[in-house]
Length: 312
Image (cartoon, rainbow, N blue to C red; front, side, top):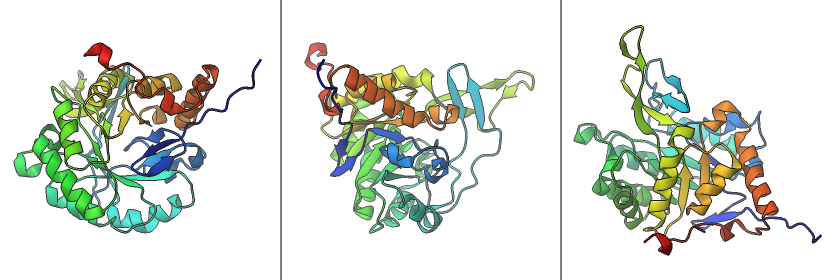
């Protein structure tokens, strides 16, 4: 028997090297530091903070979570401590670890996004900003920014100019065709795209005979949305030159490998963290085991391996 290979899981995006392609999805790992008592943060590629706004937000009134047969509905309302407190209190703690830090930012107007991004200009220890484009645009009656290519372009440009950081555009799946939105983000200067965010769903309290959530609609995540996320990553990979980060229902190393084969440069693990705080470490191990068992030396060797031209 030959000597077993040691697989290289490292990935590079926008000039930053990540030890492996596994990240904690925004909204599922707090600000990242909350996971430190449960896992070695250095064993994952990056943490992505929960959405941060300029000012602290209390979020939605409970109830906020509803477990479905194969996923989770949430109506958190982007509760967060605000950008300034994060920079002063949390970022110094994250700096103790080698894992990369991606900050997710949120706004209800173009000006709010810009102001949030400006706060990170020149701030060390933040490797990129992920821009949540699934937020309601208060200037347009609540329509999500991410459903309109022109809005995506305007916000990505503002954030990029304001922060001077690599920008990851997080796109909504609640559209007919993801490709025009992905192209809009790329054309505006995004360094990468992450997809997908949650699907819009709802639940009913049959005893009370009313919607379970006060806001009626909520975001669906978990295994139920994986096939949709996988399809959208594959579609977007066919029209983009910038890296893709796959998100949606990733529970195992096999799930992650599927996204990578469909064209994702990296993946984010979300709902699985609620099932097992060590889920991301297990996903990393699962990817590594798959690669070593199949004689794959570099993760880049399987990225986008599904032959695109075959499906044109």
